[in-house]
Image (tube, rainbow, N blue to C red; front, top):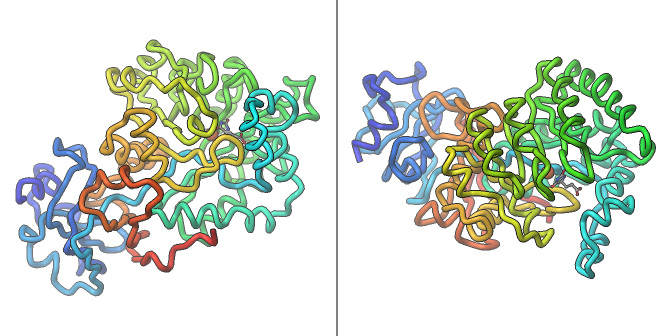
Length: 437
Ligand code: DI6
Ligand code: FE
């Protein structure tokens, strides 16, 4: 195992001086196997019988325990005994809409009786019905309604979550959603990356005034979200029931003018040129992609855009067209996986179930799926180099699992083998992480 240790640790330099913080480590994680997810050639970037040292919230050493230099272990103030379990990067759920009020269980029942998601949207339900509930809720009510969802995701080994606005569709409510997302992150202790999704649906009061709504998005909402540092990125829903590629391009131009990176809900329900548009704007991600074409996948690869696959929505909507996984692989597009937690098409609060679905429904391998919830998800949020891989210099956001192999994270259905998480170097045992549902 010295080989894998040196692969992870050396990078051509002497093992004992790499990214070492001065002073003793303040956390040593021992008696673990590590799925580092480092792209080092070996599946999962595995280090068996490993040791991880953490200092000042950062990983300072990773390798086989027996290869650890003495000063890595000397003077440590706290030890976490992995009891032979597996340590991975903390999971990153890079696409959620988890701040909202109300539910759409009534629409769920209607869809079971045969009404489609698009029919509900056209009849004024769907996203618009959540908009009504979210506008009505106070900031405190919205926080209370959403906290259990973030806590539940966090209890499944997630240390970073992206949360979108998009159920406000007016200036005050869009900004309210982003503020609630920020407060949730602070209080629950999870890193929250916030995305303005004002171009999610056309609000009823702008029914025949599409341009006027886009003016509001581009000239008021994006500038305000940027100025108040409430958004880290801008997203748009490019679809027949939402916005055209030309309209989304306008939103992207405004985002660029305010220095915000972009993402796109692309080609989910119909072939709509979404992947090509995302690539043209060098979007961080193109999400869903069920109807993306071969040319679209090629364009994503050339642009360095990550594909985000969302099997929860595919499952809930009873979709039959899978995203073009083979084409994405062939062209070398990085693939992330996320819950898409939202009240309409994906009321999915388990990232592990999303991983299982990505394997069973979309044909990803368990290793691709774990990379999609760690390393590749970090790229989507612009956090590669800080998160998503267990290696020296990276933030000490980690998850410890009671499993015999990391493929089990995709294998069990409905289990939660998360034993503990480490957030910025601080250990939280599972009992302290719980959703209220
Ligand atoms: N695609 C989605 O999966 C969610 N939004 C989107 O653009 C669904 C949102 C909802 O139905 O409430
Ligand atoms: Fe979504």
